[in-house]
Image (cartoon, rainbow, N blue to C red; front, side):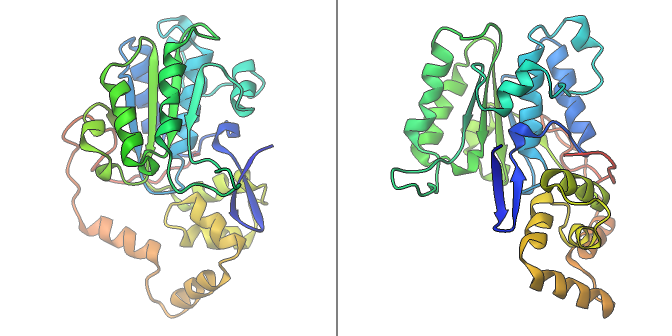
Length: 293
């Protein structure tokens, strides 16, 4: 089983293996409704803070599209979520990184076994052969870029070229921690989908599942409260950042606002405007969620 290492003590299941989703119900329905309309935009920019489930959402959408190739079919029209059963062949192939209809662009190891700091242009050019060759499987082809922030300038331009002339039945899911900083020409060719930080209860459930931690572990609840809606940050706190947790305890005992408390106070004091267009969930009031990443 592959894993993402958050801290040396905690190994986290990779998003391609994560079939459950906590929270983000509105964003999930935006993707589902767009797909079953039969006119889904070919590229989506999925943005939000680090560790809140953007890659999990991208893989969830990819599995659904690859498992349900006909958007107007009854099973798609009647679907209530993007969930695909983990025992489904598509889900198993995606989890193994072996589905012929899915290409993932992410940082990789160099010749010395060291993780690169960027996604290179040569890796990005794989999209040309991926979309241009004879399909190993019929139907849709999906490319996940995790994250588009890590494309070097040449790689970003290479991606832009294929976004400008997308192949038929192609779907690009671009994950970004800072979507406003993405190349404007790439932004203009994507439908924007904004994911909000999770409620603490959702962070607890997501972190417990991702790292096989007892859901009633007091340390997990404390880390979730300090994590500001990020599962990754909660796991980092649990994995080794004891000083941050101690600092969080001290602030609470002194009656001082924690980072999460300050964020909630700012949200109460501000009056967010409605989204102007394209993005789903952008600039809308945050709602507490009790589901999953």
